[in-house]
Image (cartoon, rainbow, N blue to C red; front, side, top):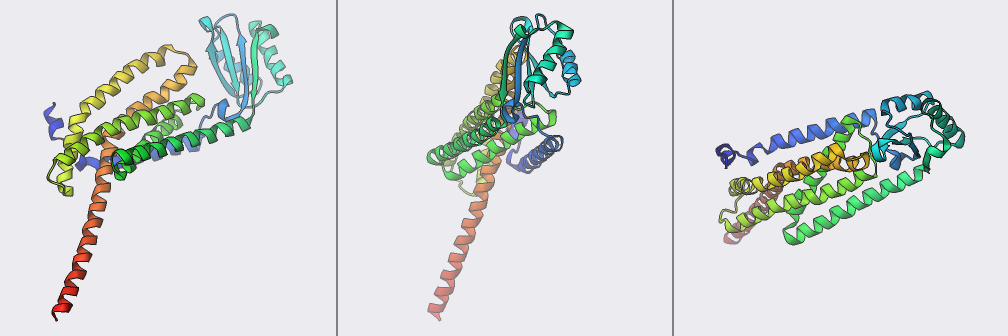
Length: 318
């Protein structure tokens, strides 16, 4: 192990982790809110059209066609050789508007009605249902994880783990806000996957902290600081190697796969990086501070109790 890593005081630097993380989350989410998050058709509703163009056409050219028809939306390629296009508009298009759009495509690229493979209108109520289901799914997952950690470890481990997971998810959401990336249903699947991945990494470190705590005779809060540092050093290699292996698989998929897979892989890639850092730095720091807080509370409670006993004893003596 690197000598600098052996001597690095992880817990001494925890305030820096907090400041950097909070600043990053606030700035990124503020940017997303100010410019508006790019919710896809799955959330906002709209129209989806899949058309066979007969050849690959650059999306920049097709964007001009949408602008000429006063439409806003996204265009992605599909099919063998990327000869098909999928047009997703944020507004539900009536038959007249679709006819006008198709006429523009016919004029420029020779597209006919027979080349329209599918047309689907998605109402905004579907998007609201999807949002509600997503929040419920995340909420249920968090509650079950909290129960599991509380049973396997202790409740303060669970609080630290859930806060670290929230940190990871907020970083991913902030990333999407900064780069204005479209948020669709694969994004929700990726977020749930990140929850599972992040909690697994955190449990590995917490398990080592618990083992070292049980084996240590120094139970004071000052004794816990080097113990947590040592636990991180013992598991950091495993955490980094596992994450790098996962990232090495995802990067080729991000490059060569289609837009549907890419919209799942991108948040997953950001989430894996964020959850690795959160489990190593944030989760352990939060656990240490929670332990320190209750250690002080316990000390104050004992001090008050001893003070009352002393007063009572003094009164009886008098």
